[in-house]
Image (cartoon, rainbow, N blue to C red; front, side, top):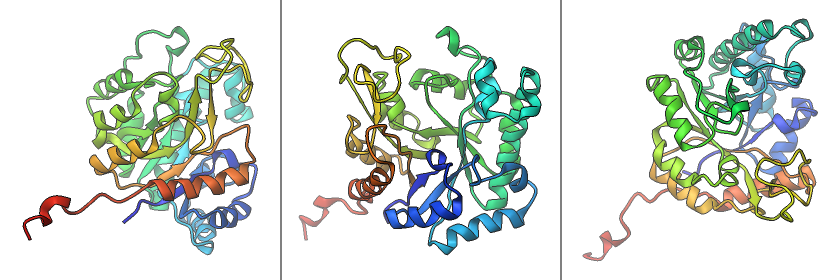
Length: 316
């Protein structure tokens, strides 16, 4: 059976869930990876109220959609980051100007995400953790806050860190150090997103084969690199996305340099059976056009693994 094709709603948080759900169904998706911002998933309510969760699921069900993961990236960034003025946009006004209070709130939101997932019947939460040393581009933090992995395990939910520049894990080596720092805790794994690895020069197919049993969720997202004019390097030169000078940029699926067929082969080899969630970003393309096209691209690219050896029939 082909994997479910879902749409991550983070880039669609300007639309109410009741408006987005029928759109996603019309685009061709099987379900939504619900972002924990906008009105798509209120963690304060979801963590304590199964009725709220049932109401959100009812919106999806009415449109023939399911949900297999929550996306909790924004508050997660404050857990390990050195907090500055930029971070307060992700936090409530009550903690503005108080880094300790902001971090305490962020840690509580990670715990609530695990409880919300349990109330929804969802087994995976994707997200960020931030990093206390990324600003140095050196070494690695000693550990994630121990409260997070324990809280997820208690709820029977797994946390899938999106390996990404600015996070504690941003390539294969740092991802391995993150696992080692947590003593291989079973609640901690990865949300595989090739777009954040390719432009760095990281072998994203090797990432799958290295961490096959720790890939708890997959983002289908494309990027291209080497298309600028030589003015801007891999760190972006403080330019906006779609600036033609940029070395790399996010592209709609199939319009970038990511080799998705190799990814599907590797996912089949490591027996990943979860959803393929489209995180759609492309500043050069209309959003609705791109989301519909991306869904079709994933369905065309994905295929189930063989249950037989093709040459087993030669002696018949």
